[in-house]
Image (cartoon, rainbow, N blue to C red; front, side, top):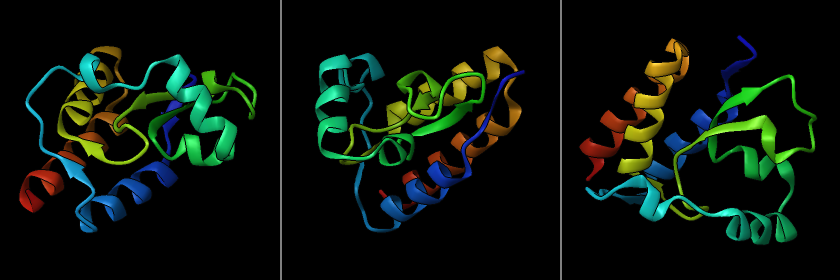
Length: 115
């Protein structure tokens, strides 16, 4: 499998959760997940590494400067979303990425404890 856990994103998400930058939402991640225009606007003002911090997975077959390298988003570039973590956990489980599934589950527990 070409996608693996992005440890920098897990560390970043833990920090955001500790700082209370969370949304304990119960909606559908599709309602909160940034679209391409929002991603591009973020990248106009931030480095690709900062973009990567918002994704729990890394696809090493994609170029380092490519949005496609980053998988399993969990936030909206401001806050960690509960439904984003749930979506990442479920997709990782379906696709067999246990390390990403476990990280999303850990972050979800931290978020729910903080909320």
